[in-house]
Image (tube, rainbow, N blue to C red; front, side):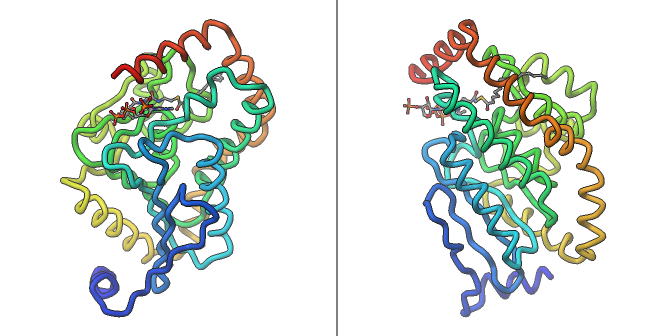
Length: 277
Ligand SMILES: CCCCC/C=C\C/C=C\CCC/C=C/C(=O)SCCNC(=O)CCNC(=O)[C@H](O)C(C)(C)COP(=O)(O)OP(=O)(O)OC[C@H]1O[C@@H](n2cnc3c(N)ncnc32)[C@H](O)[C@@H]1OP(=O)(O)O
């Protein structure tokens, strides 16, 4: 399979097709020979997840259901950041309608990504805090470049990682490690994340990152797809159903939480600190 991939990469015939996207917020390429898709988040400078970016991701994931997609590598076009997490401006002084629409699209996107039947790899080529970490944790396998930060740091901002964010972390690093990390809002270095299993592999650089992502994909493509996806969904169904069965309550928690004056104050201070950096 590795040889096949090399041939496809080096060969004269281009088998890679740009996947028609209605927006340039995501770059999507499908290798027509292998069916492997690369989805690159492309909202400079830091891929903050606003409604439009989430909608573009969601639309792509829906479209992939009708394509011959055998696997997906999620990465970013930003030189330094995989994703800075949820766009803080979506939570700072929104209207209730806007906040509700935003949260609904985040839930939609997560459900699609977390339940994708094909193998998914996060090629984490930069920092990945909070919602960025959620995206990475929703993939099946995580590979990260050195010396970047990843984690659910919400507590540090005066906000709370929702239950399903927490569940994703627990499923990966275990309940005790997750509890400590979530209470403290720890951002782990890539190296620390590899030690606790939050990421599966450390890459030496960006080239190595993509090579390792393709290696993982090659291994997965050698497995019977139905058996593979049945086991995957079996592992994920409780976490998925927990949100699917309580979407409305989860949205209400979000709205009630962010509209608190203290939370708005924390967000304002954090946004100012980011601007002053
Ligand atoms: C169990 C029951 C629970 C009940 C609770 C219910 C509900 C809970 C309520 C709410 C839950 C919300 C969950 C939230 C999740 C999130 O994802 S919040 C976002 C957290 N993100 C961060 O903390 C990251 C902040 N950003 C950074 O640390 C850095 O930007 C960086 C990613 C490390 C990149 O650094 P650098 O390359 O140096 O880039 P700059 O810092 O200079 O940033 C460039 C510009 O981008 C702006 N920006 C950065 N991040 C964001 C963001 N997340 N949103 C919006 N904008 C962002 C930054 O201000 C710069 O802007 P200017 O160029 O200065 O205009």
